[in-house]
Length: 277
Image 1 (cartoon, rainbow, N blue to C red):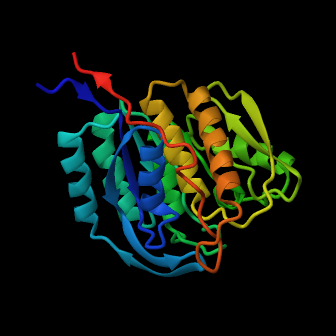
Image 2 (cartoon, rainbow, N blue to C red; image 1 turned 60 degrees about the horizontal axis):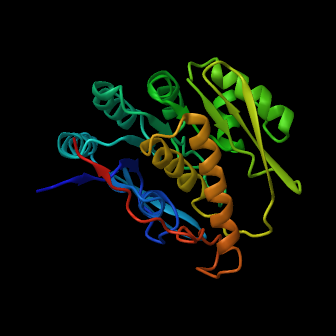
Image 3 (cartoon, rainbow, N blue to C red; image 1 turned 90 degrees about the horizontal axis):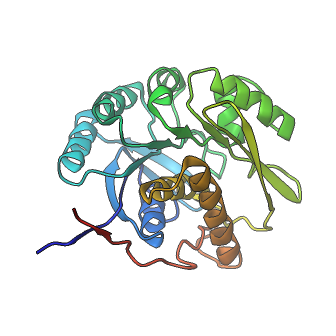
């Protein structure tokens, strides 16, 4: 007789053959935090630690079919969405997930890679704002992505705060404005909750370029903690702590010739067992 289930997290994202970002980072993060990872592939980027060389599309219908297949069989306790690079993909994902509004969604608006490569088509941003932002529980833009969403320069903490307020007005439920690109000894991220209250999170900046996939990792970590039953504030706090430790644990490792990945398995958790009713 089957007695247990695992908290399941669905990652809807792009591919990274170098293993540090995208669905690969999602699977590693979700697994390291004791949850069960299911996946839907949205795109096939050709990339490594040095950057993105090309992006091959996945048929839109195939993306919708993948989501339906997972949701019909292994209902996730939380969903993470990453790379969605065409308006057609946005519409397909949104229309499919609207049927499951009780499942929290963490949306990482992947627009610019750590290497600086822009990954999104210009006309996709409007589709994201109109369709995906309203159904997401939380979005997690970095400073470059916040700049694109808010239509303003985002270089300082004050500009982050202003951009966060502008993006909140677009219809977001909550936002984590990531401050990892700040050139200061301390980096501050800003969490705007559903009530428009702004919560700062501050950590010491780690001297390393091994941050490939840090955004993917953070959004997957937040989704994993939500799947475990944490509140959104707790999930945001714990997710950032996990990423900080993963960067610190991997800061001196050489993997590839460019921006290396995090150490996702610095303290792996056993699979969490939930007793079945």
